[in-house]
Length: 264
Image (cartoon, rainbow, N blue to C red; front, side):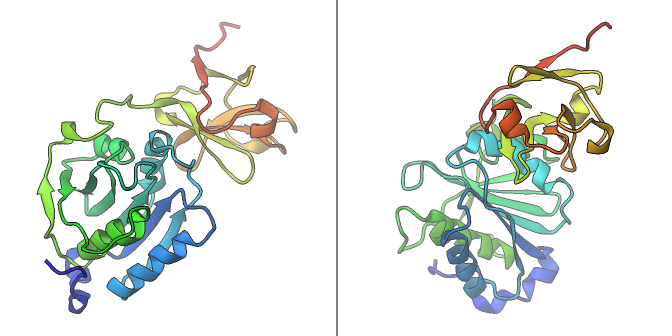
């Protein structure tokens, strides 16, 4: 197999249904996202690439796994998600490619894709058998996963082997995670809990405070902490006109307690 996808296959995207590639990484705002986008522009120049997230908690696929399905929930169909939170890069961990409902997810087999896989309807899961002839040992996002993402987006399916879902890392992780998984630019704290699984009467204990539910920020007095269902469908901790990360003293990875509502 050649070390580069065939460039004359770009027309296949319409028939195959992949309309965009979305990058989801812990790379931050430095040089690495541009390196990946440059490689994708070479391999699949007609397919748009969007920056969905580059500020996932560094080195924490166990947290990002619970954010990833929420990020993808309201995205348009026909998206290939190139997902890289990969502290084991260069080691023995495998690579995965998963298809469900017309979307593809590509990334390391370290649990990052586990919650997407767990919630998918009739997913098709593949081990990535193909390896590039020349690749950096520390930048598989550019040299391995981006190559596979381009191949899949162009309709090529070579280099993939079938694998059972229960043979992947994280298949036995909890369905929801009672921890903070992401802090946004406003200091709001997203949790690995689907709000649809948490009644609005529930109290959440975090940072030594007991938070009750509110529908939105304007219903809460300035400076008061509360929880709500955010736009991604997750439980989010917030402070009206303030920063929950500072007020509660919490960061990604810190636990929260879900408690029954007070009888009062």
